[in-house]
Length: 114
Length: 115
Image (cartoon, rainbow over all chains, first blue to last red; front, top):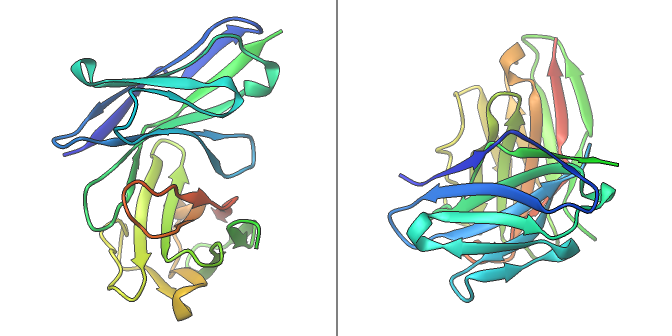
């Protein structure tokens, strides 16, 4: 069965510091992987997606993620955090079923310290 | 429309009442999904519609939950005899074809509170 695990329900970094949000997946077939961001009282917005083209994926707002099959990981990074990055981040995996339903991780809340 | 819209944005109801939540997908999107976001449970899939195919209802938590999609566009999620554990944010998403690589666009959600 496919699953997604996000390590750390809450991450706090200083403004300007590196952001690293961890995601590991389990899938018996090659996965499609996503990172979504949810700002307070808003819906989910796609940050980036991996669809087996390039292992290093660049997304919006300066975020990127690297697919590492050997580590079954898809960690999200940003070199320099901004206050506006404070939000909830979800790693997700798309199943190879007729439903194409997304399996979400439990989410990581990112806080930015001034 | 510019994006997926959902109504109402907030719904407060009493235990035992029925509620209907509405989703308007992006025009032309053939696939529509409902998810539930609740504390302690994260985001969970509820149901999926793709074109005229039979919906995938495998995520519905009980037979009190049902959903329809009329005319391949608007969808209504109905919860009968609501319970307090139904309190959550219900998210709707749509995508162009429902294939694996297509992005799902999410609406802002309906926050349901069952008293």
